[in-house]
Amino acid sequence: MVFAPIEGVEPTSLRGSPALPSSLQPPRTRVGRGADALTTVCLDAWLLCSHGQPGSDGLPEGRRWERLVATLLTASGFEQRQGPGGTTLLGTSSQSGLRHELDGAGRSLGRSRGGWDKTIILEAKAVAALAKTEVVNFEAKVFDFYLGRLPTEADGAWHPILVSAAHLKPGLRNLCAQRSIVVVEPGRLPLPVLNWIASRAGSDVRLPGPLLAECVRLGQRAVASVQQRWPLQADGRIAFDPRWWSGTELADLAYVQDELSAAVLELYDTERPGALEQRASNLMAELRRLQ
Image (cartoon, rainbow, N blue to C red):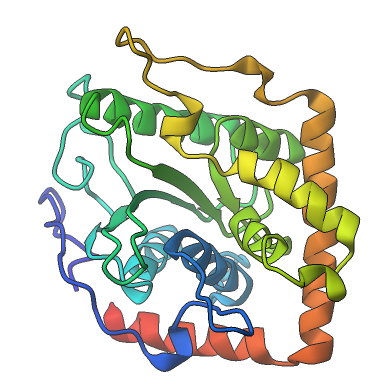
């Protein structure tokens, strides 16, 4: 693997879809429908947050954390990917010309995901208290790359993901939802995972129907792509709609995520005890092999 590039050397984008161990195939419904790559990456990143090996201060070492998170793209079968240290986005520069360092990026071309063609951009943090400037800087980097790829990527789907080894403050979590940055942190399940569960037929048999309905209403908006949040207009301008969220809706989103996460994890403990822990163990073994 080249997820640990030599200092000062641009890591090469990797191509090809690796064969996934059966233990790390995407989660599936009872009728065999698999989750998309965004859901799978977020689930495994959450397991990494919950079960990753900590450092002496209770958090993983920063550079090691970046490499582990980036390696998730290989474990999830992304055909194009780059690891920590890259200053382009899969080979393309930002509009400003600044060399923004990314912790990881990958594109699934849909060959192994049933037509799912999306780009994921990773930011991995292993600090006890994440500063708001880190979120703002991450968004600015993604936005600069987005401007540099217009109009070509106007119909694409980019999903920035912030993977934090520690909990985020509520205000930062709200800021991420407002700007369509997916948050993965210990404890609460990531919104793409909850959205996938909530949208499955029959999920209300074992989970609270009102929470599922609210998750569909609010959760899908929170994980919209960069292109959906900043759509290209007919006259060549891009637009940002401030009406997407109110303060009340952001508070409702946080409540739904907390409550539905607790309900899903309790259901796992009852119906499939040890399943998540076993996937986490398999994941850590696979990540060590791939590094």
